[in-house]
Image 1 (cartoon, rainbow, N blue to C red):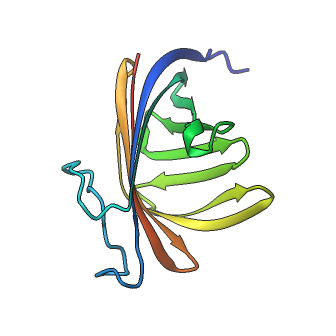
Image 2 (cartoon, helix red, strand yellow; image 1 turned 120 degrees about the vertical axis):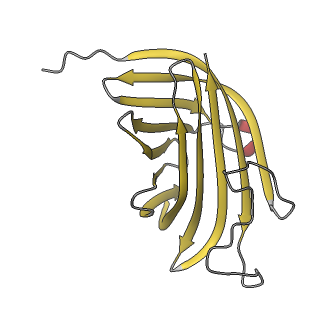
Image 3 (tube, rainbow, N blue to C red; image 1 turned 180 degrees about the vertical axis):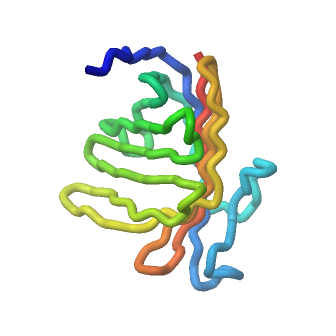
Length: 171
């Protein structure tokens, strides 16, 4: 029997996502980084899209497992979607992003095994793709922290998008 209790605390969340579409016209179709590398966090001019929003959510801890859960932005057409980032304190560079609602998804970001098969569902149409993790930076603290996911999306063997997703949270 597991006697570890789950501790849940409300947090304020800020999300920023830089997205660059990689096309055949790109200088390097094999993994061009179009947006800010997480090393310096400077926005470059060739990002196709920049999404920012603030919301409220919860951070939960049960043993070594940490979950950060929040509602997605209604203005982006994701009003009924809830996202949860899950990781273990002893392996912070392995992050699982789980979305529930009208567009369920399971995404895996792992700096040790960077190419992961993932799935996304829009309506009744599920599709598979690969996440290629360039870097995971997880600065966990129970009072506030930051998770940065620098990754590419690959569809049918072709890298189509480069994303730098940042989630900051504080109590």
